[in-house]
Figure (cartoon, rainbow, N blue to C red):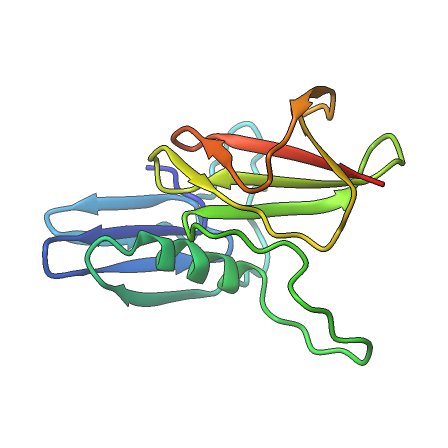
Length: 170
């Protein structure tokens, strides 16, 4: 089965997740989880997957119902903290619900404003607040950043796995 960043198994007592940074083929069978490290097909490219491969993987336990921890740890493995000289920044856009992931903060395609793209990661409807210091008026947009209405940052509503894009201007 295909899965990005992690695959997990759990019961009423808790669970564990297998995290990875680049290998998205998993198998869950007879109580075992496996991770495909190399596919190496011969069609359409006879030389596919040749050469040196590097990857990281990790295991993490989690409490019952805490898949949000697994999502966070998957992101940490895939986007490790980099230490560099510079100015330390405060969190610029935290959310209240740990199931909501801020996937992207970027300049708007129009050049006017900042786009914050979020999604609900656990497959359940939820409402959260987005606390941001990026300022200005907030508009909901589609994925192409076309306005679809005003955004209430105190009450952003998500359907299961829904992506929400907010444009902050001003």
